[in-house]
Length: 176
Image 1 (cartoon, one colour):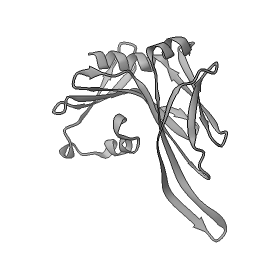
Image 2 (cartoon, helix red, strand yellow):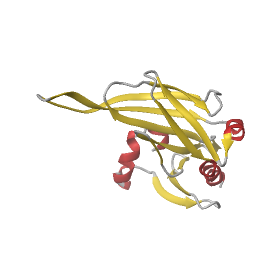
Image 3 (cartoon, rainbow, N blue to C red):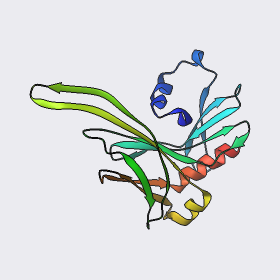
Image 4 (cartoon, rainbow, N blue to C red):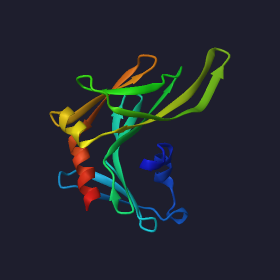
């Protein structure tokens, strides 16, 4: 789920309710965006996420967590999944050059394969989070989108285009 690592997102799709108190539901915000809500009433914890945003070699979710009745601002959480050498994503910029609050979370080696005809190759995953303030959204939204360039140490870059409607929908549903 959103706050516990990207790998758990895939497990949530096949997760049986008998293993946890969490319940998944979908709530549509007034702007028409469907928000996934994972509710754990026992723990007074609620996780909200907008639809997945595809990026080159990965994806990003706009989401927020409410614990103990305290709402947190939406963040972006995502992952790059690729083969080859480590790229080491380490920073992000808004359009125009202002720094975004980028946090590298985890780097994992997945399945590896090789043959006598090719070099060994492994699936690599780099998870990250970008914290967004209300001021960041206001200052950097253009045409209903906040554009962020994620940068790797090997000079690879990826542009994330976050619809402001996703952020608004998460905020609205979390405030209910």
